[in-house]
Every structure is written in structure tokens, then in C-alpha cells.
Length: 147
Image (cartoon, rainbow, N blue to C red; front, side, top):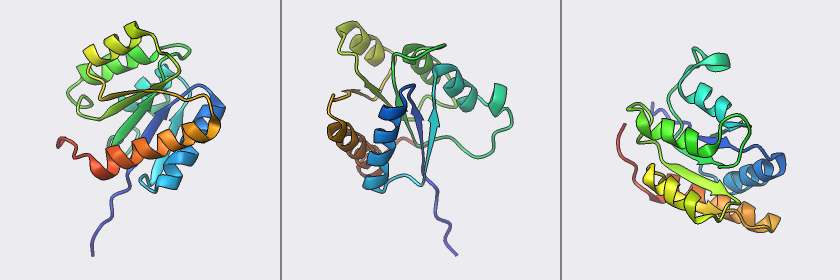
């Protein structure tokens, strides 16, 4: 019997409306079996590195991380820095989805190894479509490096 892999996406987003629209887009793209939503950078670090409330978390790593930049406690740049600095997580594709169009944020993100930088559109339907397309591309079309 063939085992079908549950594809997990980690969504790190502090804005509940943006998170809802992103999850709606991912669901419409039918690429992820599970979307885990975390509301700040510290929760993301704890989840990825199995610390704090996520000590002993079972299962593997997400296949894709959608990461906002401007968040409470720990910002997205610091989360990205930690992900790309660690051998166990550096190959997970990370897509920044943010409202920031600041050139310094774009440059820092790529310097740290982000795989893609997307500016969130203002229109709700457009954000849903951007999330759907990102999920389809990164999980359906892109070939990731083995981990």
C-alpha cells in the first residue's frame, strides 16, 4: 500500500485577516494537506526547532514556509536568519509575504537566503490568488533539494 505524504506549509503571519486569506488561497490551490498558522516569529522558531510549547513536536519539517516580516516578539528577518543558519532547516523553501516594499528588507532577505520575496497586494482577492499561486509553484512545480 502506498503512503501518501501530508504536505505541510508553515504560515507565520500576525494579521488574522491576511492569514485567513492566505489559507483560503492555499486550500483553493489544493497543494497542502496541512497549514500550520503561527502568529509571531518566536512561535515559528519554537515550532521549527522544537522548543518551548513545541518541545517534542512529532513529525518532519514543513515543505514550505510563508513568512511575514513585520511581526511582534521576533521579526521575520531574524526568523529567516535562524532558518538558513541551521543545517536541519536551511533547505526548506522560505517565501517572504509582506507589505514591506523597503529595498533594505528585500536586500537583507535575499542576502540571508530567502527563496522568494512577495509584496502582499492590498485587495483581498488578490492576496488569496498570490497565496494560491505561491503554493502551486513551490509545492507543485518547483523541485526542492533533498533534505
